[in-house]
Image (cartoon, rainbow, N blue to C red):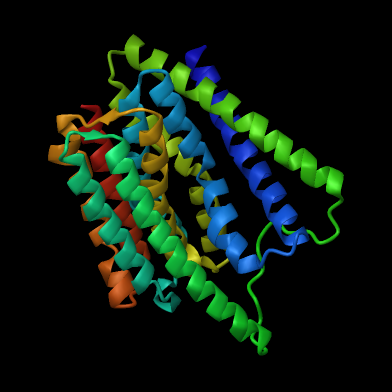
Length: 315
């Protein structure tokens, strides 16, 4: 039953997160908020809501290792799995992406995160540092977005946001918001409580469950989206999405969760998992700086590295 309820919790989380994003995006644009600002804020927060709720629920349930494992594991999975599997299906034309600035921010966020981890705990002090870094990044991205919006006003086409329906009735917007706000905590509670039961039953630590089961589960939406984009030969934006998601996971999720309660850092994180996460991030250098495509060969390499990492974690 714990496996069944864990799966149910994950499904509820994914559907509720999607519902919240749809409702919030449509409401914001109905109120006149620019589409690019919505992309930078509401969509980013909404798509990370499952990970955020899981981390907060884990701390409330006295399983902080699951919270940290979820974020670190998700970041590693986002690079090795979410980019690796779609590349097995079709070459991903990431050479068309301009992601240097965001990539630099992600590497800086990763180094800051690791430095704070060596304090031994993510507490309110670490939370303030991470959230201050997030505020800086969001401010810089908002300035860039407004500049792009001015260019759109001068004739360049503005990017569309998925899930926007100008004719969506107000009652449907309200329904999406309610389903998201009710479903997220419910799904997080189900997943965390039952994942913890599974961990204790099999003698596996909360940290390992977070690094594997929960991390892969919360990366499924990104994986599904990227696979479909690869099949349609439209995966050139996947790299930018993964980089942005990883940066947000480090700064926002652990930043907010650390305000709820302290998150102690296991020695395993300091000696292995954090460095795997950083190493996986550095693997993106050829695609970001040398503008290489992610070919099927790279897909094999990235996927094999993730399988090897899973074997090491579970042994």
